[in-house]
Length: 158
Image (cartoon, rainbow, N blue to C red; front, side, top):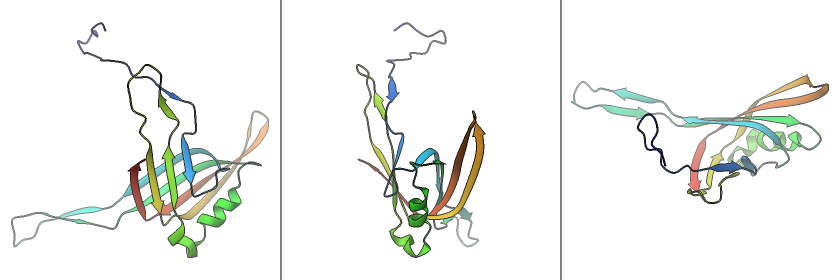
């Protein structure tokens, strides 16, 4: 491969393609037509400096997360089933959702592994729902944004 003008060896180009589902929500309704998904998980970390020791203590809070799903509400998407399952606080211990980012595969003849990552969210509970009705190219389109809280997150390769 020729050398770059900035004198950087770029190495072999790895090409990827998207030809399947990008995000699959297991344990929920497959008919939910998701347009976007944002997952946040965190905890507070507070450094403390005791006055009787020469050390630093890091105190952490209990982690928690939020999941936001944008979706199209229509004849295929069964939003009601999703709301019934993840809106019931009495079922929070069994409200688990797995997210598998996927659909990415290396093109033939290029290097790269097709690792499958799976995020498992536990204690999922809807805390807000937003509906939007708009005219897109002469069609009425109803979209929604669902915000959820969750209490645990695991990441695994499958």
